[in-house]
Amino acid sequence: MNGLNPKAVSRQCMTLYKNLLTGLGCVWVLLGSAHAQSSPGGTKITLYSATTGEPTGTAIPFPGFSGTINVVSNDYNNDGVADIIASASFAGGPAIAILDSRTGEVMESFIAHNSSFTGSVSVTVQDVNGDDILDILASAGPSSEDHVFDGAKLNILRAFSTDDPFSLGGSTASADINNDGFLDLVTGAAPGSAPLVKVYDGLTGAIISQWHAYPESFTGGVYVAMGDIGNDGSCALVTGAGPTGAPVVAVWNPNTGASLSQFMAYAEDSTGGVRVAVNDGNGDGIADLITAAGSGDSPRVKVFSFPALDLLFSFDRRVFGPATQAVLWRTAAGSVSGAAFTIQPIITIKDATGNTVTSSAAAITMTVSSGATTVGTTTVNAVSGVATFNNTGISGTAGTTYTLTFASTDLAVVTQSITPTAAASAATIWKQYYFSADANDELIAGDHADPDKDGVENLLERALGLDPNSASIDGLPSISWTEINGEKYLTLTVTKSSAASDLNFDVEVNGDLSTWYSGDTHTKFLENTSTLLRVRDRTPLSNAAKRFIRLKVTSSP
View 1 (tube, rainbow, N blue to C red):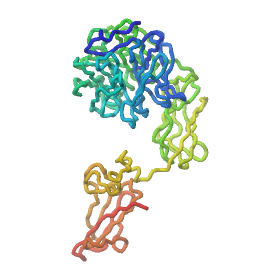
View 2: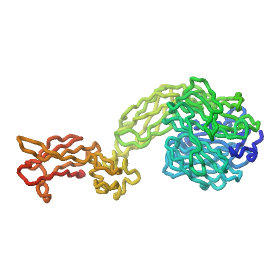
View 3: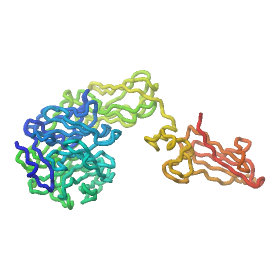
View 4: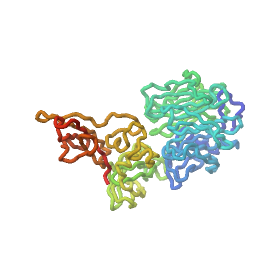
């Protein structure tokens, strides 16, 4: 199987195809997220032969990380063998690793975005600068910028923004679509939004074309891939419907959005979606259309010719045996005593060799060691072999380490240690919610700071349930009067926030704006609940030339 000459590929598409050599590790998980096989060292990527479909080895790109991994495959170092470019999905940070597919060794690794970012990073590879070395485009989920890294030096060649929250965090692909010598970007919508595909000019950021790949009511997301399929000298865009959709694969003209072809890659009743890629699957020097079945379906890979759509070959990525063990795919974290974990645990049901048993609906129950109790839902039924907890936590002594046990009938149990912290104060929670990284900055988040410059300090904003970052006087206390036996009394009405349980509310009155008075001698509470305060002056308006009333809010000691 000979690799394609990059110079022979259409410049319009500018995609550097490299054959996936026989027996040397075709990474078919390039079609989407790698199946997470938890191990003591971290998530494993399984490598498969391009011709036999048999596993050839495993690799661990991010030691210690047990989440899902996104991968693409291409010949990064020009040695004639397809390498692996891996990035971590949610909670994995913006790291990228380049691995030798023959040995599983990490050849290069680097941070693609701000190290504090914990979303999903999507990668594509292209020769952007024409040096015959593949460069790497990294799109960091809901980030403001995409980065293109020089494959030779791993420095940033270009940074640009798609400025589209509906596309970011979805699928990305790249090619020189408009033939201007610069890498253009294609985004497929992330799950939760309409199935919009957008093509961006890589030089200017302008939208070249956009359209809905599937009916607008579909919100499962869109997978995208680019390439000169069929070897006709033009660049085509391939889309696959995301989860909850039928496995519809479509081929488009990326410049116009015109439909070129559409077909069902798998059974019509399959609802796990279909991932897509473009590469030479059978070694004839022509790029083919590659598909992989989505979650819940048999893990079958199919390779089609184009435009005939003949099935060239197919194989299952894994075959699983009976369920024997529960494995922590994501550990619980962020334990505050009495509250739900900020990161909920996820358990996968696996066979003896570590494959997820997608047919399993086993009930997984979480318990905690002596001295603590569980809170929330502690038993979850697996869906397609995955049990996801959503409101589980523990109540125990802050600073004490406990053991969580996840168990199910006939399955080997799995455990983890966790140490709860004391519950944060209402003030701390409020500051972290509104000010994030600036929560400890007194000039921004302090009680007497006024970051939105509306004349209302943070302490009063919290007391009244107002947004400290949005200038507004809506929601401030209102003044009226209460009439009793023909006399009118000045009255103050205050709407209190549920985040202000630790604050003291006091109403003061006077007649000259000098000395203020409060207490039963001077004021009377008409209503005082957790959310509403109404207080009147005891001095009638008829007995004084002027009367004043005000709200005083203080922190509890």
